[in-house]
Image (cartoon, rainbow, N blue to C red; front, side, top):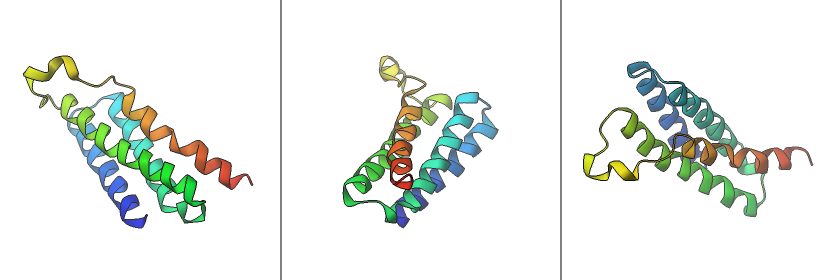
Length: 108
């Protein structure tokens, strides 16, 4: 899980770099959500195996949908697939879904 946490943290740094290059509120929200996701994945060794699966799934979703979102924000999304761009909040939902499972474990 530490490798996945490092991957999400690296993605958060890349998202911040894109936000500096092409300032947008949603890009900076992605940066914060990805950083929170990286921390949650890093600390997920305390979670049960069941919740670890959720954390890993949400971390991978954050990276995959976040990359697609950043490609669109940079204007690199192919015109042939213009109808298939992601909604602006899709990445944020993926990044934020893992926090309740992590918080539920901490409240025990």
